[in-house]
Image (cartoon, rainbow, N blue to C red; front, side, top):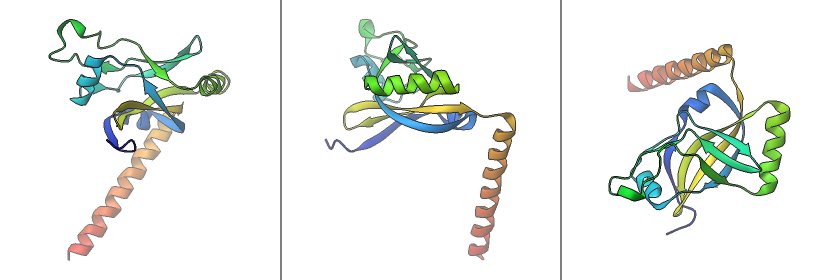
Amino acid sequence: MDKTSFKTIAENRKARHEYFILDSYEAGIELVGTEVKSIRRGGVNLKDSWCSIDDGELWVKGMHISPYDHGNIFNRDPMRVRKLLLHKKQIMQLLGKVKQEGLTLIPISLYFKGSMVKMQVGLCKGKKLHDKRDDMAERAAKRDIERAVKERNNR
């Protein structure tokens, strides 16, 4: 299989609504076999997940991977904490930004890159209520414009 092929498994749409994504990183994720099989079937939810740095290691918390149907005794806890794989230098840079600037690490998407499962982790800053309203108004305006253009082209 081609190493550059991407297949998105899950996206955290809530993250794009709740946060400004300042920078993103690609991280590997440490999984067991039944979790990968469950992910291939689409049994993953990133909605309320976040990342933290403990003892110089990056961990994803709150990510739900459904138990694999045929996994029986090999299934793990669906909400267990999973280790993310980044270079030590990258983790230390992230730790500095999180501590000094009050930013947070949020999983943005989970995807296959070749046969490997990767996670896109965003360095994010929380949005205020007025920022969320501005974004919603902007999206509504774009929708209205596209609708008007489409309607005009159909005449």
